Length: 85
Image (tube, rainbow, N blue to C red):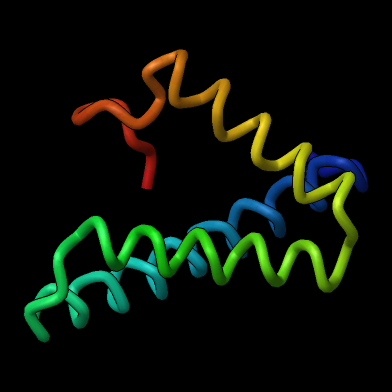
């Protein structure tokens, strides 16, 4: 079975997402091991992410990402047992 360009792009994007999740999970664990509270780690991660989004893509895309994340929170996507890693 041949994969179309869109299928390949989706597979590459998912592999990148999984690699990013792994990297962030390691950094999160290191922060906890250093005695940093989860709220502080989360705030620092969000500040870094949005700062990079603004720098690289501008305010419109950063705000769009923020809106998508807000909708996921409202939909319960981050509740225990629903996270996809």
